[in-house]
Amino acid sequence: MKKGYKGLIAVLGIIMIFCVGTMGIMVFKPLSIGDTNHISDSESGKIKPKKISKTVELTDRQPLKYDLKQKPLTKKEKVIEKKISLELKQNHFIGTVLIASNNNIIYQHGYGYANYKLKAVNTSKSQYQILSIQKMVTAQMVMKLVQDHKIKLSDSLSKYYPKISNAKNIKISNLLNMTSGLKLANQIPRPMSPQDIVNWKIQHLVNDGELGRWSYQEVNYNILAGILMKVTNRTYYQLYNSYIQNLFEFKGSGFVFAPDAIPYFSTNYTQGKSKKAFPDYSMPINEKSANQFGELGTGNLVMSAGDLYKLTSGVLQNKLVSAKTNQELADLATDSQYAGGMYHRGAYITGHGRGYGGEVVSVVSNDGKQAVIMMSNFSNDKMKLKIETMNLYNRLINGEFK
Picture (spheres, rainbow, N blue to C red):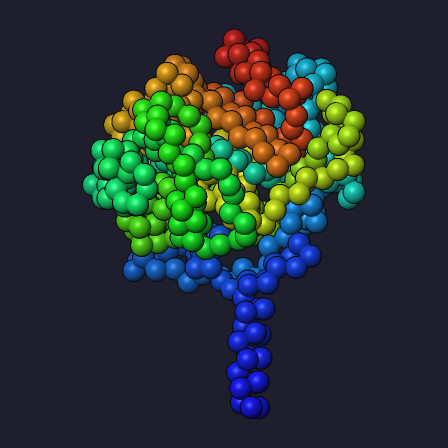
């Protein structure tokens, strides 16, 4: 009997250590997600994952590092500040603004609080969840495999996930431009490993029968993340380190569930019951741990404005894949103008991500040299951040910030 009790206690102990989440801080078994703190892959393609023992509900999280005041503006930045400050103030903008001209950042400045309780201000170092703009990263990794002849845009989904409804007729290209007809009604109930996330979402898919018609559904990119992992036998995060982080050498990027990698992460706020167009900082937003993991391939990457510009300009300047391969991706855009995480608008592209109280908008010329990026830790319908970013971009192109 004593041996039996000891065995039972041991099993219960293992379950508690590996699986239990309490009070917003979840302790769990390492999920073989690879290192989210940017350790390089070895030549063998294997990676030794660093143990991530905790993930914090975002309402409880404060920046690990922060500034109490802005760094002084340069002479040129002061000139630009005079020209844009009124518009930003009228729109109650809080966050970070970046303007680039001729491949150089000419303005980068923060507004409002990164965390009101700490009196920490948003600065050029502040980090924000880029949300749906991360799909550009996932698409680039897919196109890298296309360029390396490991997959084809014409591959049927049934080659990778035969149990998905209508998988035989759905192509990888349909996932990249969101014309697959696949939808997802529910979100994962708890944090899971990358592969388990994909499997869970596949089990809960709905096919609306409208193959070929554009519908913005994030699950398309969850499935693409799954295909990346199946083909390479690596986790999404290992692939990100190998293809993206090692190439661009970002200094201010990481994933939302790994706080140590994103010490300047700004707290997101809602306007609360007042429904005002500006935050009173009384209600920080809570992003559940399950969502932090569940945004696999679609929206859990965190970046500074400088890193986001480096990424977007690098993609447009064909740093990861060739111009020919990127054109193949752009050619997938339908009437929606969407393909590969970007909206192709003719002479420029736009990116947009919104959720969990944050919003990010980017407008970048096709050659990656001219850009306006606005990243906010407060979002509501009255702010019109897309319009504001486009206005600043037009002023940039018209030479107003020279």
